[in-house]
Amino acid sequence: QLGLLERTPRGRVATTLAFKHLNIEPPKNLQNKLIS
Image 1 (cartoon, one colour):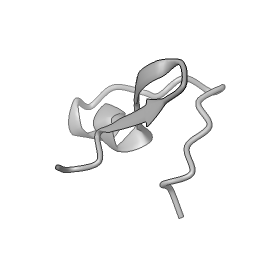
Image 2 (cartoon, one colour; image 1 turned 30 degrees about the horizontal axis):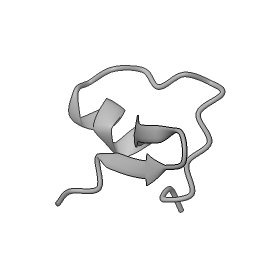
Image 3 (cartoon, helix red, strand yellow; image 1 turned 90 degrees about the vertical axis):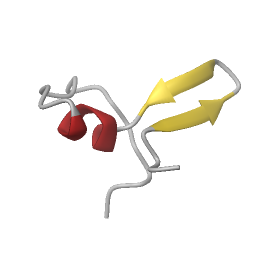
Image 4 (cartoon, helix red, strand yellow; image 1 turned 45 degrees about the vertical axis):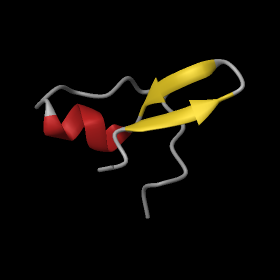
């Protein structure tokens, strides 16, 4: 329950928090409402 995945109509999508957790650069087109 860390907020690494977001459920969408398209399916489950990794959040930018997931990319940070894995030390991976997130794609530029990733739109994430969880980042503030």
